[in-house]
Length: 252
Image (cartoon, rainbow, N blue to C red):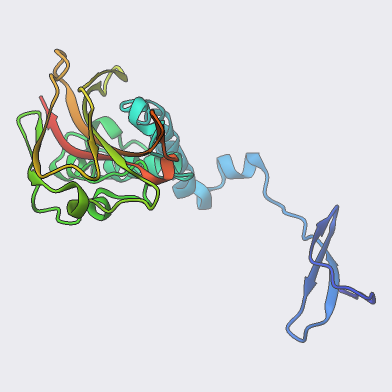
């Protein structure tokens, strides 16, 4: 390792040189270690068998996740964080791991989703992790989802919602997606949005949507979005303030 003598410190990598600060605060440089790993070794060495099997399963879930992210695409456009895709991959991998029929490397998402726990993993998945429904509704015991209907009795706009500072209006909507897991196809029905001012009186919120006619895995999403009134215009706030959550499922 070489000691760096300079009026400033350098950290990072340039070509084959790695610059770092050692435990004594001395700026040093060293050659990057050469890796003896090759694609051929990874494919053939027994010691990498488990990693190869995990890689196969992850690839399967990443492919399925492309469709999963589209199930409520209209909601996700308006409520999504930067790690949405990665979290979707992780969710589907957890579902796949519930496949008890097949061994590591041969486990299938289509089997895992048929199990009780595999399906329950879906509930509460947030497109925007920073604004989960549990933080948007002040009291989550007031609302319920039943028979393709979301209801919130005696909703008090000013007190029952955690409002972003600039928001003057909130939009609620519901969607049900039917996902044919085997064919990896889907259809989604969206409801009619309800827009409520922060200053309105108490009221009953009822959201309904007719599910798709196909009967496979049906997933229900709720959207809660915020906007601010400027003159006669209603301007949507950034998606980081909004919520899109899976609140129900039914495997038909």
